[in-house]
Image (cartoon, rainbow, N blue to C red; front, side):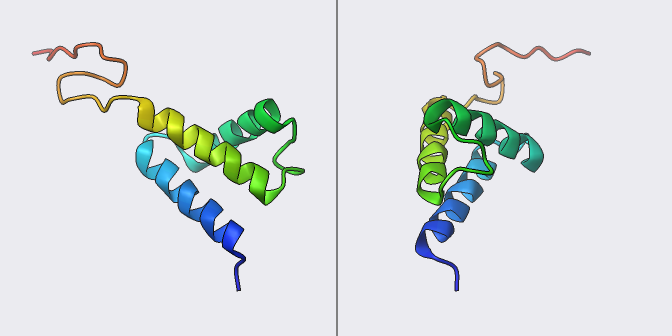
Length: 84
């Protein structure tokens, strides 16, 4: 049986994957490691599940605050031009 906190960590991790499909899993985990060190001063090896959950929610809020780009704009709002 998986404890509730771990279930929640996995669910939020899945949301992060959906919010940034271009990011590979290893990249996401490395990024979360940096965020954990920055936000709670613990590496992924030493971070508690509750602390990791806090880091995940913070990162999710950052990603959801980015306005989704339309078909003619990239994520940073720059217009894309077709090259013929």
